[in-house]
Structures are given as C-alpha cells and as structure tokens.
Length: 104
Image (cartoon, rainbow, N blue to C red; front, side, top):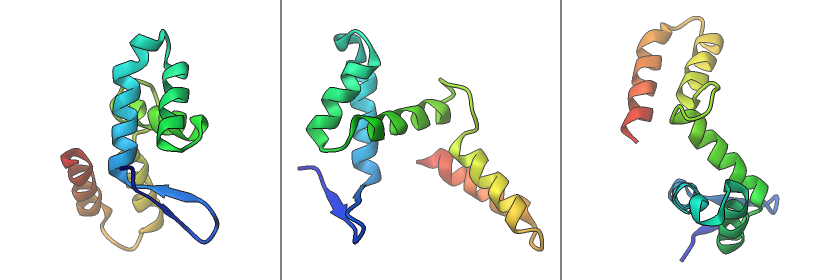
C-alpha cells in the first residue's frame, strides 16, 4: 500500500520511501519501455502522482548520484547554510549535513 498524506492545500506529500521506490522502479524499468518517459508515465499512474512530479524526482536523483550535471541536494543545502548563517561557523554544519546525506 502506498502511503501519501494530504495537506490543507490539496497537495499530496509522498514519503521519502515512496519517492525512492518510484525512482528505483523508473531506473529498473526504463529499458523495458524503450525510454525513460514511458516508464515514468506508467509508474506515476500506478502510485497516483503526475508524470511531471515523478520526472522531477528522477532528475533530482540523477543529479544527486552524479548521472546528470548540476548541484546535488547536499551541495545546495551547504551553500544555503553558508549564505544564511554568516554569524555561525558553517563548516561543522556543512560537514555534518554532507555526512547525513551520504548515510541515507
């Protein structure tokens, strides 16, 4: 059973486990579909999200894994911490954040 939570704004929030599972399914099944987009459309309809939402999750995963260029999630968080926490020493926070992102 797929767990999703509805918020007051009628947006559905999917758990990280559901997102991760859906992205893994896309990576595993894209060869069977001939390309990634048909796999995304099929899997999105099964979990109840839009194909565009799942495509966004897949692109983020590709960036985080170094498959596609761009700034990873952990690097984005580190840049934000450095930018918005100028009065604190950002290096320990950035180091802990990167470690936490690597562990998951």
